Length: 338
Image (spheres, rainbow, N blue to C red):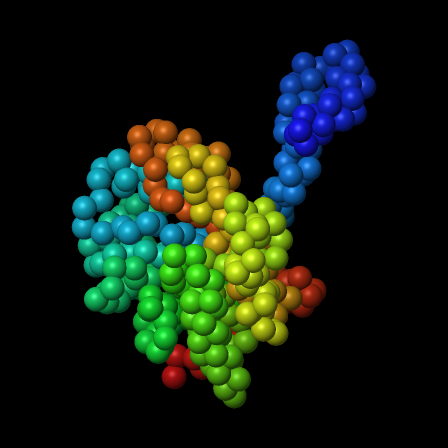
């Protein structure tokens, strides 16, 4: 009923536009479909992620986070093709790129994933440490990205071991964590407890003298943002509280779009995020959001299988020039590596 009503209202609103377009160029009339679709998405509460600034790609870098769904020793050719095509789309045009991956089952899975990166993984640095568990985290740094130090974080009370790397990209450096919080059959309290342990580690490191204040915790949190919960299938689940309630001060949760998937197409719940420190938010951040899901689904149709039960998310950051605060971005140092 709600959709029928809004379609009626939008049809009336667009009627005048349609009549004007009929006398205009054919391409102008064709744009009406895009206009209608965008208005419908906005009515439902979805917002297309903002595009990064045009014309200064050399000053930008990109961080992609993706739960690759139990990638291990038996990945089929179709799965590899779907991974490669999706990563190619998500990382297209990124002069400097980093991938934070979740659910990498073992060494073989990490090697398989590395070969699906642009250029077949040539020039990329793989940072991965296998564990006895099947849901490991990994970080891959592309050409032009220096990994100053990296390794697993053995944190008591966190089931899936987070992976950390401190990287330098152009004139900026920061610490990135790839994490996957426990799902526990949807029990949000398990995810919240693990997040608090991880954030205690991050804040302890950030408080050390001379520490780099720029942190990004990327991954599958199985928790929504406040806005993301409204857009999710689990919107009425009272026990599934917003991640902001557990995050605490000094960090912001980015990406409101639902990115866990329901079947071959369509998304269900808002699980995947970037948690960024205030310093990074105010200085280096450009934009963050889900990747183009239509391009992912196109890649999967070409490959003949679904790449993962999650869509990737992407964050664009400034690696040179003036940041959001108007000051030139600059290196902070590698004290976290000591």
